[in-house]
Image (tube, rainbow, N blue to C red; front, side, top):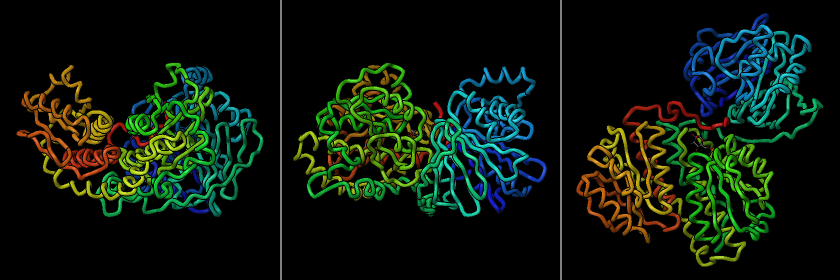
Length: 607
Ligand code: G6P
């Protein structure tokens, strides 16, 4: 999974391509490369490490060109190295690829027999050689691309240039995002509109099976049958300040502090005086909701944790059973679909391969309807779901998800309320929730002020190798999210447990070297949780507890941090905040590259 970009322009494109790569580093950042068409050769430069290293080389070499392609990589096949970095070349063709070619071994075998030699361990290199092979018979890059993709199984977004085509870039898409950016006297291709945000606000989203030729003057899209086809132009304005860090040290820090606004944007225009408004998930959605009997959530990573919290809300507020599955597992267990089940995907990017594949699988099953909660309106998930709620959090750049999560939770609460409304359930609670939701941004702001208090406990965690996170009920998924944040960015091993499970195994880990972080809001489970924490105390454990005003536990080793007063049902959103701050500050103390932690990527567009 990677980011690709291409440009055909009347100006020099090297700098534009590298700037675009910078904005797509969330898709991978282990190596980068660029290929530029020059008078009688193709300049190919690849570097190991982040895009800034490629940029340094480009500044030194200053290549000139009006046509080029570039790539930022997240390794799937073959370790991060210069050789495995893209663009891959075969004779006079250079390509960049995002996705996975599932039949690459078979193709590689055939190409080796045909006399091709492979320089990399990647699956992508077969595309370069296949294109080269078809160019011999077809003599034209577009025709060769058409033939080549017939042989590829798997997911791909490809951009290619050829020495004989000084003006033309050819691209192809199947199951990996790809769009054309329409400019003035220049046109582009990229995996994400964000990459082109300073170049154009007009985009053409390609569909699976599409191929396109792009020159500086024009572009033409062809469908699977190679017939010219016209695809809609969409205007998107991406605020430039949304993709810069501003006064903050890291994107993650900025995104944590953006949460009051982000959540306000999610709920904006969705609430009436005493109830949620009708059809906020799209025209006809309220009518569909009146037929719901079950909900199936599917998501990955942080978004999955949001679904797990949502489950409690749906069972309490809408009073309907919910199932939550890992997107990567769901479609491999032949799920039984009960009548009246709404299929819900949750995703920040809307491009996560497993989530998208799960949606496509569900479309073949007897679900009542499909719905997505998504942060990117132009994403494949948003476009392919029947109903959508955009979280409106603005671009999230830090790899560790923060504002996307809390806005997903706000979106899920709106969904639970909407369904309850359509099913005529729990009106009194909804009325109360409308007011609590309106107040939520203020409470988040209050919670962000705990930063200094949290800072005091950071040194006691930053020097440890392991941590335990405990919660109960709807706070269990919140501690799972807290543990995920800590491990992602600080590389400390962190495990989350429902506190009642402690005695069934993890209690054996407790000693004075393992910090135990617990969430203890005031609710019906407080007493039970406190008993579980006493078990930790009795074994000499160190407790860091975030809880309500009336601390029910006396802590000798560790700290109790008092949370602002908040609504019982919305408390999972509030209790997420200190765990984000804690992970962020611990990672800062350990000096990790926390916006781009090792081995990870923001958007995982491969299975
Ligand atoms: C990656 C990111 C996570 C994210 C997950 C799902 O692993 O690093 O932060 O939660 O993908 O992404 P999505 O865009 O579908 O929410």
